Every structure is written in structure tokens, then in C-alpha cells.
Image (cartoon, rainbow, N blue to C red; front, side, top):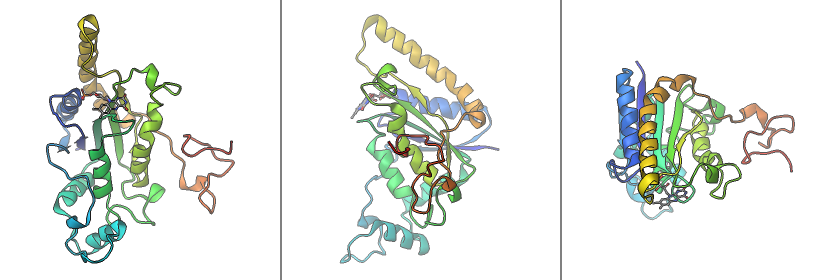
Length: 254
Ligand SMILES: Cc1cc2nc3c(=O)[nH]c(=O)nc-3n(C[C@H](O)[C@H](O)[C@H](O)COP(=O)(O)O)c2cc1C
């Protein structure tokens, strides 16, 4: 049986993002999956990594985050709210993230969840990252909304290429070993339309919710974002000139 973890980063479950996450849950349940849910705001997840979370830390020494996480892993003293999320990640075969774009990036609570939950020592080490990441064989999907229209979010759009805005979050998952599916994006989501435009948006959003069953049904065959393999880099970890570039984040010489 498949286990799907849903991570929602939005302050209101009645929002479109909240409804979309619910549609994912219903689809998974219909498909017979076990569903694990993390509604980060509703859970009151603290996204700020700080010394207070680590009681084994000496108060008079500088808080070294990577070392604190590694020691917590060694001592089995990972903060309880973090270990609960790690447990879900380990149980899940696939992770579906639901979030809006806020200031050209995922909301801060999701970034903070990455900062804390993807704990050094526990979920990644120098030996276990990228091609050797612990989560090899698991697949993630971003279900994302933008306020901007599709054209504005295109490669040449004024609001910036949405695929590039999502790349750092996708690469974070790739660092841990996940495969990352091509994101599902609903554009132009906002409450400022009136009249016919408002009605048209309501229809489009309802259709997006209806489409979620099909998206989850086809999840395993959904195409992946391409990343370079470890072997595409030379001894100093620069992209080898004979290897392809899949993103402007890691590119060929100009
Ligand atoms: C703090 C904040 C920043 C935002 N920044 C962006 C942005 O950079 N690009 C964009 O397309 N939309 C932006 N928006 C619009 C949101 O993406 C939009 O409100 C959301 O996708 C709507 O989904 P919801 O109805 O589920 O909240 C922003 C909204 C907020 C509240």
C-alpha cells in the first residue's frame, strides 16, 4: 500500500490551497493510500531554528546549527515536533507539498520546516546526499498557486520564471535524494476579480480541484524535474563541460 504525506503551508484551510490539499487527501483515500498530513500553520510549527530547541546545547557557546542537529541525532534528542515530521517522511512513499508563492518563493514556514526537519546527521550527511541521499526512490510533487497569470510566470514573464522560483526548494529535496515531479501550478489565484472574471476563476479553480484525482492516480508516471547526476561534476564540483545543464542555476560557461 502507498503512503502519501501531504504538507500544507497556508494559514487558512478554507483557502484554495487548503481546498486543494483536501482534494489531494480525498484522491489518495479513494486510491487506497495511507495519508499523513502536516498542516504546518495549524500545527503551530515553529519555523525558526534556534538554540532553545536543543537542551543538550551549552548556553555559553555559539549555536552551531549543523553541529547541534548532528549531536541531537547522535544523542536521540531531536526536538519532538521535528522527529514527528521525520517519522512521517520516513513512512511516506511520496510527498505532496501545497503552497502559494509569496514574494517569489514558498512561504517562510515551509523554508523553516526544511531548515529544521531536514536535520544534519539524521537526514543527510556528506556521504548521504544527492545521488546517495537517504530518500532515494521517493518522489515529491509541488502543487503551487501564484497570484500572477501564466504568461507573467513564464520563462520571459515579468513575475519571474516560476520553474526557477521553485528550483531551490526542488533542489533541497534532490539533495536529500528525492525525485521531484514537474510541479502542478494554478496561476492567477486571487480575490480581486469581479463579475464575469470572478465567475471564470471560480470555474477554473473548481476544475483544478476535480483534476487532482487524475494527478494523484498518475503520480508514479508523472515526469521528473531533471537534475545533474553526481558524475556530471568534476573534482572541484563544477559542471563538466561535456555534461548537460538542466537549469540556469547550474549552467555552462557563458
Ligand atoms: C505575502 C504575499 C506575497 C505574495 N507574493 C506573490 C508573488 O511573489 N508572486 C505571485 O505570483 N503572487 C504572490 N502573492 C499572491 C499569492 O500567490 C496568492 O494570494 C495565492 O496564490 C492565492 O492562493 P490562496 O487563495 O490559497 O491564498 C503573494 C501573496 C502574499 C500574501
